[in-house]
Length: 292
Image (cartoon, rainbow, N blue to C red):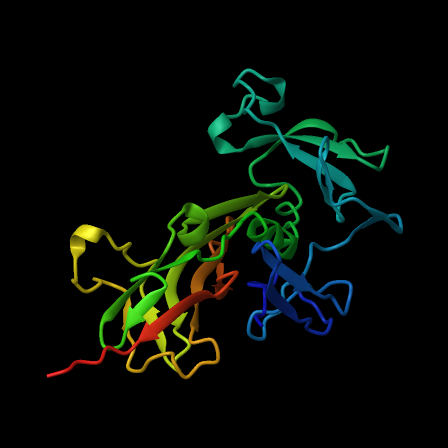
């Protein structure tokens, strides 16, 4: 369970909501964020991050962003859209000013009596900066772009091992199984980029032991003979003969490090995301009797 959000956009008095990160059936990262109020969208260790503030004019709620008009200002009742690319220096809106000293915004006002309309010069962003996008929604969208595959396990020797002899452990490598994976969700003003990569792998060897490995492990090759694995192996100390079917069932869980970063502040949310193997891997362990 994690709190999902990073920074306060505007003061909020709503109760803090909760959130959770859950594995989906297809191993995508699923985020559930419930909102007990109309303004709060999550919490990061006590802080509350709100959705973009409401935009109201003459008692009527207006869209805070319009794809054709830009962002809305409650204080002026106007929409502002930065003109890109920047108009040439001889454009009438500059009024003889140096283009390096500001920007030209196209102004569209709800009040028909307003004289401020059409291309206008501003030394700074007019009526304050554009309203921030809903960071929670962008983060959720970015994380859902990361399609993670569960570990497909291998062992050497395969199927049957011997007590006291090293068993190599690894799983198939691909971008979906080890990373890095990247997804970017873009809003009207900011974007959120999510990245994920495998930090550790924990093997449950079904003999009351676990093995921690860095990464997916090294595949065994026949020419390596009886050498030990350089990064992921296990030595069984007892046979599996005591099991009903004489078999142990191994599983591997890849621990993904996931990071979501917002473009405006560079602030990030990080968490670990465990992805277990879809099935278990059977392995019989025999005990070799030596006669002198």
